[in-house]
Amino acid sequence: MNADRNKINVTEEVIISKIYHVRGKRVMLSHDLAELYQVETRRLNEQVKRNPGKFPERYMFQLTQNEYHALRSHFATLKRGEHSKYLPYAFTEHGILMLSSVLKSERADKVNMLIIDTFVKLNEMLLTHKDILLKLEEMEQKISGHDEKIMLIFEYLKQFEEAKRQQSSQENRKRIGFKNPGKE
Image 1 (cartoon, rainbow, N blue to C red):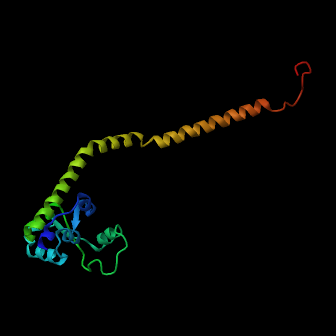
Image 2 (spheres, one colour; image 1 turned 30 degrees about the horizontal axis):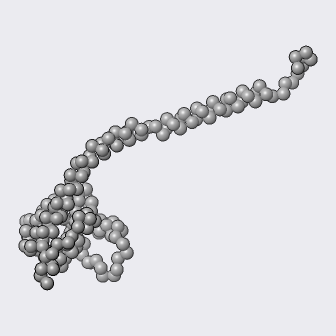
Image 3 (cartoon, rainbow, N blue to C red; image 1 turned 45 degrees about the horizontal axis):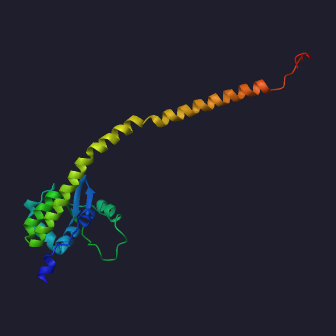
């Protein structure tokens, strides 16, 4: 049975689905990490509290009520009792590294390696696509005023069309006054 617990069958997609953006940082929540490590969230939190020096604010922080509610809105319908009454902790990449040192299990080490590899791949993807994002920003800045200019062109076209219509109606109107019989 212990061999089944240490068998790692966690995919990158599962890990990525558990990474959130909170306070401008990519984090994973304590209950998601506990699930991946196959430990109780309570045990994970106990180990963190026993080692406060390893988890400064830049490695781990507790979510506020508003942050937690904002994240919960991303989840599917929650069943009663599915989530703890305590606000979860959010661990940054460095905090996750520290978790393996306090949990001290083979599974924690292996899962941590998978998580860190996933974070590294995400960083590489961001760097790879950074040039594309910069190009898109440049293009967006170039065309940002185009909508107003296009609307101005349409307004001029409408004015031109109205002037042409008025001129045409002026030329085609029935003449009044003296008519020269030889010219009709």
